[in-house]
Image (cartoon, rainbow, N blue to C red; front, side):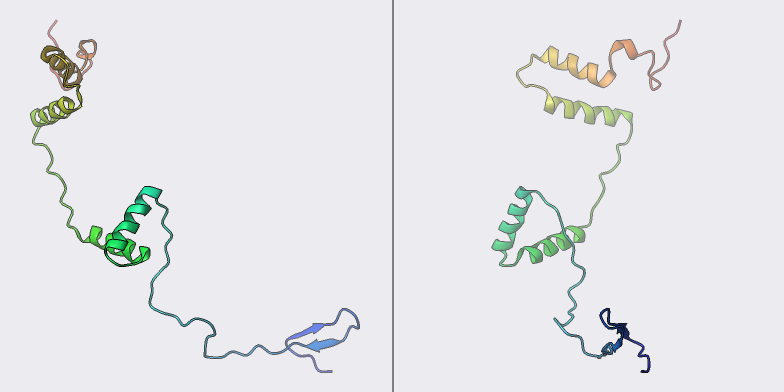
Length: 138
């Protein structure tokens, strides 16, 4: 018996049984290929998923279409970075404004000013260690 390229030996009788040749066809079986792109899994919170679903429902599209559209919209927006502060005085002014927003409005004015000064200038114990301040004369 001639040996077939694709053969298997029967374990019971020891004969070589020809293996059916694998046919290669130009046609694929199954679902036809489409230009859908890469499938990406995204892990989001329940709240974000609910917001995306609400947006998708309002725009009459599926969740996948909504996620793609929202990403496209986000990427198409020209991001302009905030201008860098001009110098240390402007940085201090920005810090004071932010601290003012965070402080309790019911505090007396003098206590608010003391807290702002302590946060911006730092505690007096460390003033000798600061490199941005002139060294005290001895």
